[in-house]
Image (tube, rainbow, N blue to C red; front, side):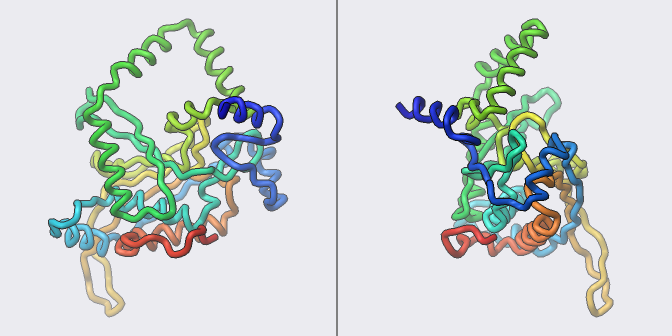
Amino acid sequence: MKNNKTFLRHIFVRGYRSDGTWVKDIDPIQRLEPFLFRTRNEASVYFKEKIDITHTMEYIKRRNMNKEVEKISLFHILIAAMVRTAAMKPKLNRFIARKRTYQRNKMYISYLVKQKMTEEAKAIVVKNSFDSSDTIDTIASRVRTSIECARTKSIAESENLVKTFSKMPGWVISFVISVLRCLDFFGLMPEKMIKADPFYASAFLANLGSLGINAPYHHLYEWGTVSLFVAMGMYYDEMSYTAAGNEKRKTFVDITFTVDERIADGFYLAKALQTFTHFMKNPEELEHRMEGETPID
């Protein structure tokens, strides 16, 4: 019965999607942007932020010495800062589909997990759901569980399915992908596929610092609905000057962002970046739930 009602909504409710709500009351310029800039990469903006995480690293070290709480990492703080920022700046959780702007119904973040740190090891994409009530503790626990599961579970069934599909004639592959794109365009993509597909997410995250490399500027995926790609490089030390003119060693990390600018204007995105940077520098604020039950816009 539920599936029948969902199908009828797809057919009779204009602009209906199972993963988002059509935002009709938007600025006229933003309404026209999807027609002027037809793809995510055509509408992408790239920028890099150098963040002082000296206090953050001290916080991690101090907290991890406490045996009564579970250990956290900079990766956990990064995700928690992203979640809290998206809760306070909900336009970040939007996407463009069929030249319309949608507010995502839930918050999802996808990221890649290597089963082992070797070239031959399998890589699995993990997709976690979050909400505005999450704290650094609940987020770290959820991410930790997902990573442990990804590194231990068998992926033979899904791998065999991919291998079988990839061995089909090229025209068959093209036809199937075209059908799926058509279903997605009209909002008819099965809800189960959307929930399982990591490219239908609020953001895609790459922790390249764990591989010992710097953060690149990454493209957005045309498949799915990801409007934000975040890459974190390795952290490093630099000598800086204090307000008194004294030298002090500080720790920094470079984080790159690729954003579909059609989801929000530049001023809004700049304010969102300031909010994100604040939480990266002050992770203790993420220990508490966000005040109020509704997002702060």
